[in-house]
Image (cartoon, rainbow, N blue to C red; front, side):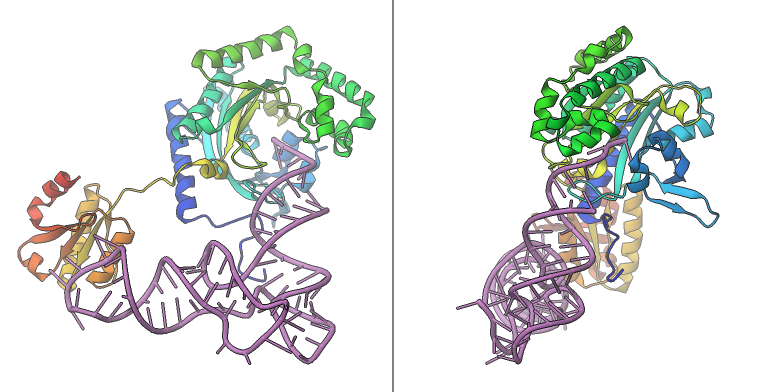
Length: 414
RNA sequence: GCGGGUGUAGCUCAAUUGGUUAGAGCGCUAGAUUGUGAUUCUAGAGGUCGCCGGUUCAAUUCCGGUCACUCGCCCCA
């Protein structure tokens, strides 16, 4: 803490960044409501056990990439690295099964102890959508559609490509995994060093290795589709035809994988090439085994999370806030009247700027910077005539308007 | 955890092959009509040259370390 800097990988968000991110959240909320999703908020920290159980103890993600600490009562707590585990925990804790299928949306900060790079921070923010309790492929299609329309609402849909894959059901996965390990063992010496260690830890990850030599091997590696059970194949076909019916294009990407056991069937990502190495803006899939693994009743689920920072970076423009009306009083009496007028106009729904200090010149200059449409100048003369000077800040012309006619005049100008 | 790049004013960047007062644009403050902005003109404020150490008569400049930012690798729940 040598200087007053934010902690590595965290940052202050203000100005245009803050406005862009707020816009991402509000558009998402609007779309989620249209899809009949309900808001949910879960704590930013949980018992470490919640994330440990969902990740599996073996993963060194648990040890190395989570913000874990002990509180004064000796509890092991972790700042949430993702949304799904917390929401699944809430589903169990709150007995939400009684309500049948739950459709939730949420947004908030996440924490991962990683080396920061473009579009990747230690504290970052996510949108999240989950459908819990629905086993059929219609839910998968619905959740992907929600993602797509969110991107559309943000005007970035055409900068992304939907990548789609199926991991099959548990039986398919077992068979595929075995075949994959078998295949790569046979070519062990040709694998990159990274992938040789992946072979033990997480063989599916070899499929999206960035190493060129690995990629060549992956070309002729076993394909998950060849190991699908009939049910798994039907499920994937149903998801694809559901997307086709909506006219949603996608790229079938067999390299799109999920490392953990509870993932099954649908895996998808909306990916962009505009953000360097961190191109996934929305990623999700089906996790039918998760809630059971957490200690709840067997419950299917499907959902996604989207990176707010990444989406905000993709926005073409910073969304404009409405242009205000600036009220500019001259003198103490006018200042009092100005505060009352500002209050009334705001009450009627206008966006109004009223500076706390400054002479006319400074206030006009400020109004200009705030991109005000009009200035309402109120001096002794105007006050005496129960009127204000209505000045158009784009053109420069100004007219004296009776206060009683102000609503009408503003309406005319608008 | 590993590798590349960068660090000079609030912001974007110059400059000094090691030498005396480190510059510009934008922004900010004030003035050119004490009731009129956005244009123009003038003046002003603002810098431990990221930090610590080394070499040197002399370091913002060269060297080492460190911190931060940045791009990528690993990882990606």
